[in-house]
Length: 269
Image 1 (cartoon, rainbow, N blue to C red):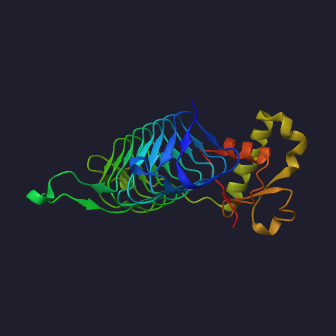
Image 2: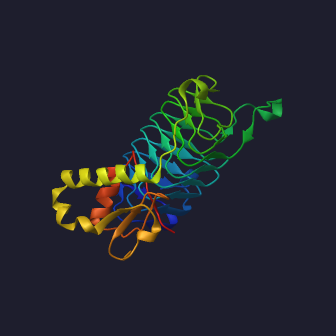
Image 3: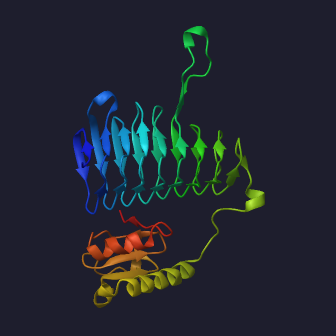
């Protein structure tokens, strides 16, 4: 059966999986201008996207039966995750930053229109929806064209109609700030704590993939960029700034997939 990408310019990275029944193009059967799919991306079966331009960053996972459409561009960052049957509307523009989680059956909307404006309907608006880094929409969420600031979180079943503050937690219909009850989604961790956790994770990876044990030095966990010595042969994962030098080896890819979705790293610029 295969998949179809109907675009003038197409860029697909390494280690990409696009399942059967996927269609990517523009609305009304027209060609999209540009479709960019980063390394390690997965798009589940029967997902369909209709945008003028679509960009998906590295290691983003979009599960089956996702649907997206709109007159404006859709840009999705790296290491994002979308459950099945999500709706990604870009009538007013949709920008999703790195490390965003969107649970199954969630709906992201950047417009409202249907009522007859000639007859005086007041409800007709297009506005960009921006979701910043590390935001988590737990599942079955409905989100209006708002700005969700970094590390904010909406609990399952939330209907979000107002901007979400950084590292605050929201719940309900309409969603209200519940941070005083739930606490923050994120707490501060020291570089030493992050380093210890990553070393433990790497050892766990090697135990589950013993074929990589002889090559264990091809990946190194470091505390700062000062420890980088040979970035052309070794994948350095720096816990200080959450970056790694992307070499796109099979071992590096398998380690990234092992870390996701709980731990996320981004290519060093």
